[in-house]
Length: 272
Image (cartoon, rainbow, N blue to C red):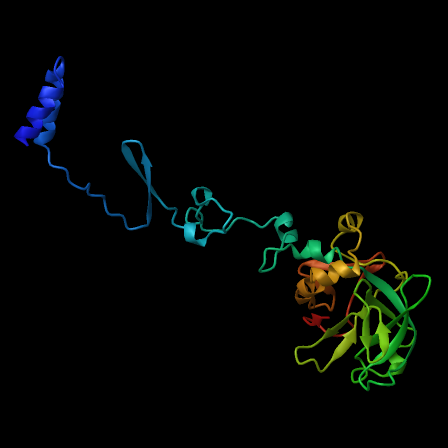
């Protein structure tokens, strides 16, 4: 060390006294790894020039969504009662993939229809074939698996609820262009067609929610979009009847201009 210090002093002549003192000071210092204070929660170490800053993670950081900023999340320990849920939050119910179900439902073309006539499918014992007026120039042909649940006379000349923007399907040689919506119990032993209220106009598009929701209803998606984005598969699990037999999407009523859509007798039932 003495040899090294001497060499340093020789090289730095002329004002080298200060450098010599500096080297001498360093020669007496032993360098050790700094001891970091222990923390019970994970910490983030930020190196900013000469200073190490310690930023403890927010205690809820592992419970926030990927887009959340943990620094801005507040805990509920400061208040014993949760914050009230606004109507906007209710409208923004999302599924497990963070997709707004109400927005998706607004893309469905659900209409008031009327069965003009119905008959048994010649190649499928479980199917009825219905000719259904949905307010278009020509009635649609729709196949429904309702044979074991209701007699054919019951559905003749009956007003129904039709999902009209599905891609047509070939069902045992018959092209089916739509689907009749029905409620069913948990065991699927009882099935009832959804019924538009008295005075509903054939061809009217049905909506979910208030009159304001009706006014803001976007145009329906195309059948290709419905299939590609699996919109019906996303919405259907959220469709049920309530304790008063009313068809609902979450907390939103299924409505026509004449009133709410209902099942005849099934409450808290699935709709498909």
